[in-house]
Image (tube, rainbow, N blue to C red; front, side):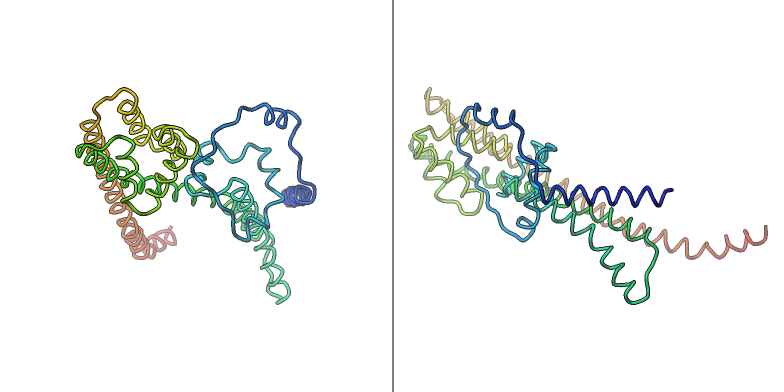
Length: 297
């Protein structure tokens, strides 16, 4: 009965995936109406790109996964940070899940042809495990890369704050300090800052509004705080040099504390293999004695 239930579940999941691939679901009427009536939002500053074989292979599953509410709001923010489209991410999840579910049956088929087949239990468990792992692996990779980019951006933002403070001390205006300081730095972080300031010029909006939008899209709170401080200087003439210096110092202190915490965590992880090795050595030594005691009983 258990075997039949497992086979039935596997066949049902396979048929559902095949149906979703051949006949992708259409969005509901309510979703289309809400999309038409929604107020236009400002164009995102962060850009996305699509590439890879997984995006093309898993594209028919995108609508089915989107109807399930995937991905989450937090993961959408991480995708924007790494520059990856939502549809491409869902297609990659589906492609890896399907690939992982098909590898064990194919290996079992090869073993059967070679007259060395094994039971169906291990291929079934391996297929389910690889499918689940392939489905969640892109999420883990995106979250890790997004956190690395945010950390890099906070480091660059600290240097950007110091440059702005120096330019303001030299008599430059707020707009001039923002644009001159961003032209000095290089790398992905300063490229996003330059893109935000260029977007502000093209849309005839204030630079601090573009920086606030960029901070919201990146999920970097110090950037939104910088935009608020610069807004006070640009609209009400507030003196912000001391505030920028304090923010830069606090940001450096925070990043230093995070770096130390990561180093300590890495040190703790290095001790895990030693503990496992010692445990294996103790088992290797004590197993004969325990076996003799059990045989004596």
